Length: 524
Image (cartoon, rainbow, N blue to C red):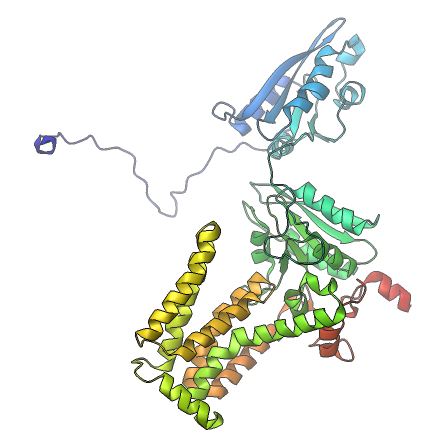
């Protein structure tokens, strides 16, 4: 019990000293990018150095002999346990190689394609002379083959890692319409897109992002429909992405945004294949990244962000009604608290007398100003919303309902806030959930506080001034050369507002402002 009273001799100090000066950065051993050597031992040493096979437990190397009548030819296979399909590797690659009887001339071949074309029973292959490229394919689930005397290698696509199945979209669920959603596997997502579009002109161009991660991605577009200038602008932006690791589509989104400080999203992310298919038919492009269940639609504007996939699947009266409700939700979510503070603080003459008396009676005994009331309840609502998201399962929804009711009732009973503030904050919260885009809803949650302070400090004049600044920022924003507020500004149709609200059942076709290729050909 009294061991802490005993004498403990001082420990010998370490000579290691970690400092953070400008010239103290850790420099790793440069492995370089070597080519496949005819000497298989040299190639093996390069693979061992790059993949750190001495300490990596999931990197598997299998040596074998390619037998012949006048000798043997050595080779080895490299793959990652858990990413590559061991059954396919054993049955279609390793077994044919080890059981083949090769002639003397065959054993002297220096091109590995001879053995692949005559012995191996595997379809998806890629020849490489760079060891770094072969190693990069191993990290994505392929197996690499090296043979003695050959100056090139080959990678086999036998990936079979565990992944989530095709489920219903979580954040973009609809009552009517398809219920398929993207998952985290790139080729599964591209297959869903190709199945929906079903066009021979659909192009899936391969990209690799991250100098270290080499994350595969596919840029999808319909050749002959997308504007070549727009496609060139998108490819230019993608080629300018510089990062060591890219792990999510949202990493790409942040790098492609023209104005990162603007709260409104400038690129649309979706988890619905039907939404991506419609965008491709309209002359846009889509970027799918391996490991991400969200696909980026390039470019996008305000009408795309506010629209819901269900607009096209409901009857016209229903879809128009829901779209009007959604527009009302945008206005309520953004301006309601600010207008309440402006009316009660500066423009009381604009309120009906009976309502003004009711508001004054409801605020009787409340020690805080209207601005403090609104800020307290808005912050409390944001805390409840964030806690409900973080707590798993049904507990989160129960916490949101019970916590909101108890907190609101307790605050009113204690005289901290007035009942009208509870109503206003609740209306704003419900309206924010009616916005289909999570990013747009989040931007309104942030901008709502700016409008609250503008209304409390300067009244309606402050709200209108801030609204003009807000609109000016949005109007000046472009997404790959396409204005964010098109077709409203600049006006590209005769009645843009009526067209955006009422035209919900038009066939998927390129809008005029995208200047699609076949549309220009028809006009010509």
